Length: 357
Image (cartoon, rainbow, N blue to C red; front, side, top):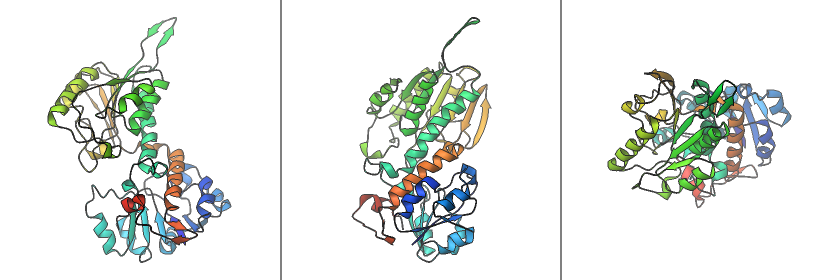
């Protein structure tokens, strides 16, 4: 069996890295990698070859592979270049792209969608979304610090004392918790809000102050996503956020509801009450944004407040993101490839959840 990794389009990350290749080969498979696929993440072709990968053209990766793995889905015009019945493994987001499974089936292919892997303890080692969210949470704080016109930590100097920056994190999932931890390491005062009361202990364990808004609808089955809340709760949450936002130097928003538009947490009126020079980093930009003024993949300035919309900050740290993704992939693939053969156990909740075609 051949597993192929094509080069990502418009992304420096790569689906497999040399340190993980030996573990993949131990599954009894051959690894085909498009030449130059790892260059953007600083993994050289020679390192892949040393670990036993076969470096070939993109056409050969697509035509020869029984399983094709990529971080972002292959362009649809390339589907016809795959083997009939080949498996594509990627992030197809079927909750948003409702007909993607039907299109893949029409093309005579099969697919696992990595964003459909259940977000359970059993599947943690395969959770690509959490891996990338962790990187994005870390990067969001560094990006905010870069744009903020003042220090994050308290500084006492001969020229005077500087107060620490105040950071507000909205959404204490994987990305939010990493943002809290990173902001605290940089010396900021951190507050965080989340609809899940269970997040309170996690926030406080990282040194953040938890903002409690009563009456949230909690749902343990939400898989790490925000839960759609009542309009009354959202109104009270916005009021609380506005109060905190006017005193914050940085707001980092991470709340997304699976298959729906991201909840609006920072309306225009809140932004306009923030101090000039403040920064908002919106990690929910791709699904509409938690900030009303967010523009996906753009950085804008509104009345002195910098608003950065980017849901894919993990791509800005391609080396470690690729390493984490490759490990996730190995842990996932070994569920259904045994001694070089495909074995789909439909009783396995992870396989059943991720198999969209």
